[in-house]
Length: 140
Image 1 (cartoon, helix red, strand yellow):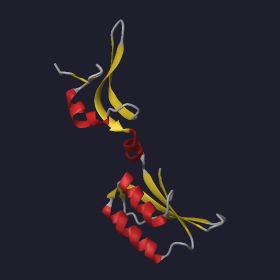
Image 2 (cartoon, one colour):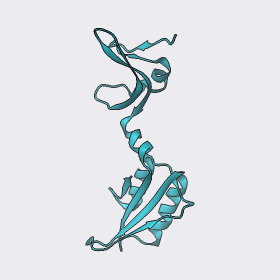
Image 3 (cartoon, one colour):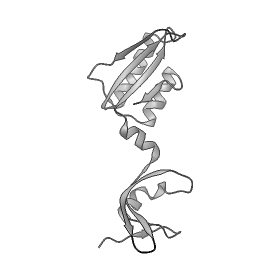
Image 4 (cartoon, one colour):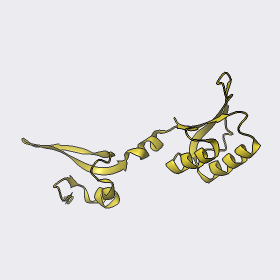
């Protein structure tokens, strides 16, 4: 039989999940809970086997990373810096770069070389946005 840990307020959670992710359980913080529902005559409860911060779900579900650059503001130097960041975040997700003119009349999408794949993360987004500007990264 699996022992169940109790939080101070009486909530129950499997000990392995609590040991790994118990720090995520704070008032007002959203988490994704994987587990099973248990019911009796009076109550229903979820017995968690895995907890993840809601932010991690976006990264896990993303199948590609899109980076938007406004031309002519970005040049060869931007691409060289971007290359370095992408190489530091190797993974299995596709990368596309969208070039736009400042008036948004022209839009060109470039699928980056198949050898360059990344692992989506908040850190990747942050590092790319430092180079390309806030809001330039979309996880799709």
